[in-house]
Image (tube, rainbow, N blue to C red; front, side):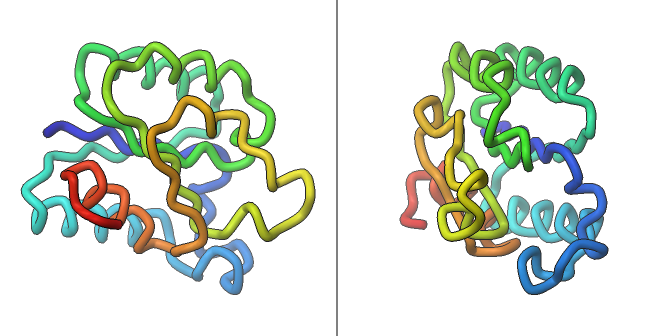
Amino acid sequence: MQVLILNGVNLDVLGRRDPSVYGGISLNELETRIYEWAHELGVSVRCRQSNSEGEFIGWIHDAYDDADALVVNPGAWTHYSYAIHDALEPFAGPVVEVHLSNIEGREDWRRHSVIADVVSHRVLGKGPEGYRDALVHLQGGAS
């Protein structure tokens, strides 16, 4: 299984953002863990991060032909980017939405995900482990 993991806006500054919310881990450390978990689970992954919405959408379009599944954390785009919603909609494989924090327990504006109706599974508020849960889910396991 080929899984593309897409992290969106501001995830490149993990480790500088509030550790009580985001866990104090850097993006590099997060990606290292993801690659380790994928190896343990026998899953092939590629991690990408962008602060450019157009680039993020382009990677989703590329995934139509190159990936079996997606794990997406669009960051703040989650709450308003219908362009990302529309890009995810035609993807034929499963899509898992992941957020380090529990967005449903945060500020009102963060509680709504415009992509929730086009994903097959959501993992909220489990910190970095949420990405492992997403990979386990994609393998058909409990998460």
